[in-house]
Length: 228
Image (cartoon, rainbow, N blue to C red):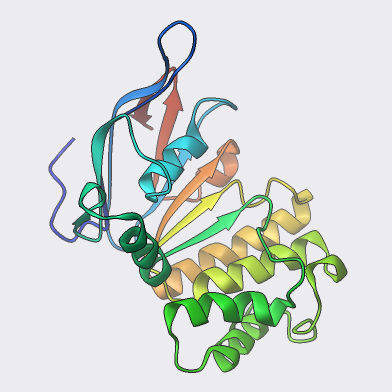
């Protein structure tokens, strides 16, 4: 693999992850390297249990690799304490998960607004409303997640993700809990917004047709990562 240019948003080098067990350790993956440029979309595909979500957690600084290093936006994660990592994520990174990860006691507006407040946005309520309108939820600002369909909840999650205008978006099986038609609509919206904001997208999926929409596809299997 060629050496990434300095403009790389993500550089992961020789990553390995081992979980301890009674036999001395279970290797999830070994010697994995990834780089992602600004505005690039990358799908990481592979069978269930291959370690895709574990890899995402390491790339996002939510988990530590057993070996190797991760650099986000020019900052090595190994040199940051947890507070600094949290600030880096709050200011530059967003997530969209299969399970939506909305706070059940908050309205759609409040869920999006909270992310903006953490970032220190000067007009969080106004910005949250704008993004909910943009994903087609103009009439749902004051609905809690329990009053929203699965597709609507994922739209709130997408609004929350893009409202902070991240440099890097991690999406982990974003259509996993949705029917096919709703999932297609959600993905169309995610890719449209991603392109408009020139966000770097790392997409975890087992869906080959969804992976085809990304510029690059990396296959995680038997502990190794290969580019398709």
